[in-house]
Amino acid sequence: MVQAAARGIRELKLPWITDVVPSYTTLAVYFDSSTAAFESVVEQVAPILSASEAREEAGTSLIEIPVFYDGPDLPEVAERTGLSVEEVIRKHLARDYYAYATGFQPGFAYLAELDPALVLPRRAEPRLRVPAGSVAIAASQTAVYPLQTPGGWHLIGETPLRMFDVHRTPPSLIRPGDTVRFVRARR
Amino acid sequence: MITITRAPPFATIQDLGRPGFRDAGVPPSGLADRESGILLNSLLGNDPNAAMIEWAVAGGALRFDDACTVAIGGAEAECFVEGRPMPAFTRIPVRAGTELTVTRLIRDRYLLLAVRGGIDVPVVLGSRSTLLSAALGGFEGRRLRTGDTLPIGEATRDGDPPALPARHAPYTGTIAVRRGPQASLFGDAAWTAFTSAEFTVARASDRTGYRLEGERIAHAGNGTLPSEPTCIGAIQVPEGGEPIVLMNDGPTIGGYPKIAVIRSAWISRFAQLVPGASVRFVLDEESGR
Image (cartoon, rainbow over all chains, first blue to last red; front, side, top):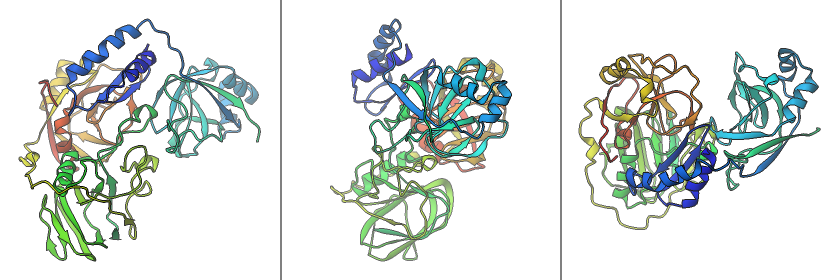
């Protein structure tokens, strides 16, 4: 419902609405308060919300992401989950993921739901430098780090794709509501 | 062109920000004290969104390589052109080769230095604002360094007559807020503490967020709130109870409960508070900004 409502509000193309941001259970609408009053924005947006309640969450696109499964935490993840490295990879590949939200940094999409067998808490000591393109898991989620940053997720692989590119429209490869499928790649 | 002759400890290029990309995880960025920025651009005959230098810590010098018209505003600072103190919110014509120095911030946090025509760095995702965490926008996505040369754009109209900024009314230590999306997670005692405490802006405060010390606010949340979109001025309360006010470069989503949100008309005033400054919050649910 959240993604359907976000699409519905974007389709209104109201000039004073600057951002429409869906997340897990919440939708935020940002508007220019110098050109529109809160009450009038609510008036325009409320009918979309009620009309979206019954609408299905259809993903906007299916994004395929090639992954080299040779991340530095792969052996530890295998050990802690009691699986073999190959089983960890297979389980990560076995399902499609839904992009619930984007945040933390530009282009970072929170993807769920991870196979319960792969669920681990975040690393006790976050890394100071996670390379761009790292494919990672934490709790019941998986993600790709678009930019080099500190981070506490377990790194299981790497993609050569640019997840965030200011010269692309839209700049983020994954947007909320998209479906993501990881594909095994060989170096 | 402007040449940085002695790098300020912390200065970036900012305009009114980068709306429209929050759903890609890109925060709005932009001038922390946007009201002073709009005023300076009006004074210089610039588009309200023209980019300028946001100078967060005193020190540093630059040279105007071409004759141009400049103005400063925002924080009160010891700022000199050709050795003479520079008044705030005043158009100052400078000759080619003139040097400007900032020796001390007297009051508040961000000194804004605007030039007629605006700083003409490339537009990235619709804005010239610097986002340090993603190294995008501004001058090569980073803080200004010695030797950087900043191009100046073309001005298209005359400047407006000088007007004294309304926000120069003396700061009384109080900032107006509305109830936040998780206001009901906070009990009566927490609300009493939040609205009566005198908070201090912590040292660990920057363009992503200002931490507040002085009172811990208890809430009924158990840390399981699903992450949801944030906004500039949202006051979130982590488990430890010390509030954090999200600022222009803050994360676009977050999972801490938000007790209150600073009213937009007060954001510029709040943003100017330096570490160590005191602040109290007062609830104001009137309509409007």
